[in-house]
Image (tube, rainbow, N blue to C red):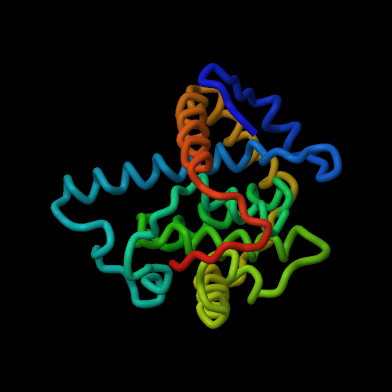
Length: 224
């Protein structure tokens, strides 16, 4: 799949993907992944600016031990776009799963005001929320051990992250239709009010990275 610099991503295209995506007819990566990647990349940049302005590192701002469970020892050398595409490629989780995962991330950040998304915790937060969302949305799912392998962590780590996340969320994982629709609308606004530039930039960067990487028939190994 290739993208040109003047490619347009419209709210209508995004909505069509979320509600009408077909694995049989569509082999390309769902647009919601690019929109979500753009949102998270800007959140990371904003948190880094806040950390510098306030004079403390965003990774050391008084997190509770339970929240620090998402931290990696080192910042993974993989873009958000590439990581989300990897998850999609090996799990084939539908676009609605990523919308629900976005709901979970937003709820988690609202319920834990001391938590900030950083380069050290974003990958583990994503694989955890996507796995939980997949279990909520999809009829059939892979085992935790498979999600762990896709996400670049051990099965024990994946199990721990899932439990910690669910307890920190007080098991509030239900997403009704109106909430789902409101988050879809937010993602659409992200595209319509100017987010498209950031999305296209993310896509182009991801394509440049992918062009330099070998294509594997089996799951390649990554470590977070």
